[in-house]
Image 1: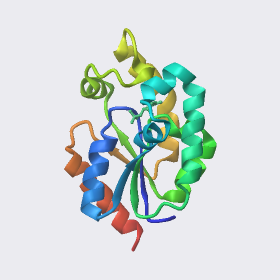
Image 2: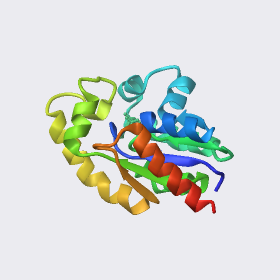
Image 3: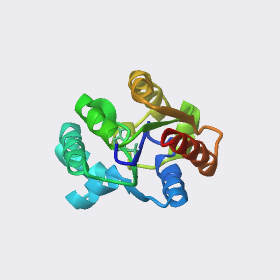
Image 4: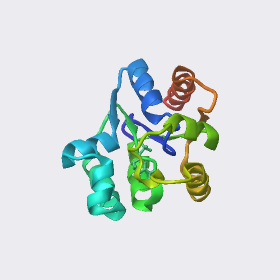
Length: 172
Ligand code: S3P
């Protein structure tokens, strides 16, 4: 482990918000895998999905993790589907503890609002899509998580406090 903290979980659970607060509190760098991919590719995640498809995006995620293997002292926020590949999970675990953020489906839906930058939730019946994808992903998220923090009713600061306590306890 390299003193990083890896945030995993579904879209809209607050990985970016919590991650930023957490990184600031611990004096660590905050990075977001989606933003790194967008920067590298020079286009948005939505455009990558539309132009090249999901499998191509998943390959980009795996390649990025390979490049990140020497990262140190970073709070790493991952795209919600990053952990769908077992190889990615292995690489993430080598970077640091996996902190799973969760939220109720209704809260996720509300948080995402009408945002159009989540290709997997495009189109009609977003609430059902959220519930369906969560159903297939929850067992994976829960199985690999070292800590689970429910952010449904917690502020980013409160969630970050819980993670700091865990992280400091782990390093004693
Ligand atoms: C995805 C989540 C998104 C982004 C892409 C796919 C997913 O990231 O990587 O749209 O499969 O859950 P966020 O979890 O940061 O929204």
